[in-house]
Length: 127
Ligand code: AMP
Ligand code: ZN
Image 1 (tube, protein in one colour):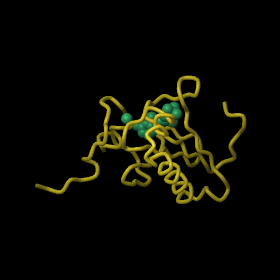
Image 2 (cartoon, helix red, strand yellow; image 1 turned 135 degrees about the vertical axis):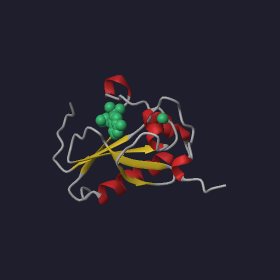
Image 3 (tube, protein in one colour; image 1 turned 60 degrees about the vertical axis):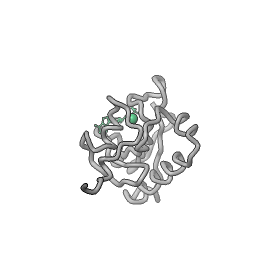
Image 4 (cartoon, helix red, strand yellow; image 1 turned 180 degrees about the vertical axis):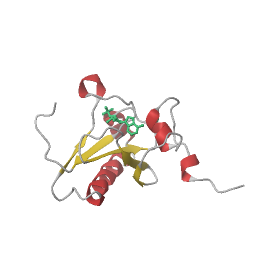
């Protein structure tokens, strides 16, 4: 039997979930970096010079569900987001991490994801 590639390993994948499919390698994405439990890829519609999404490979609908998992995965995700900011050269000048949550929060994909935005001055309040 051949070796199992990381992309072949599906963790709690939810059918019809776009980001589960990206994590499984079934839908192409521009990979930035990947870890055992999280993956970072470029947003298809960037809102800043640097716009990377960091997701857990396992399916959690939103930030509260990820936090509720209680196994350190949320901390890993944040650590990965910071690593991306450093690697993309925006950590020094500052960057923004956003978790849009629910309809009013602007969440359009129901698999929790951190937006890592940088490379320009962010505005406040957000739109
Ligand atoms: P949100 O609106 O906070 O749920 O963020 C979803 C993000 O996913 C948006 O910024 C989209 O541009 C991005 N997105 C949607 N489809 C893809 C895709 N196939 N590859 C990369 N990013 C995507
Ligand atoms: Zn999913």
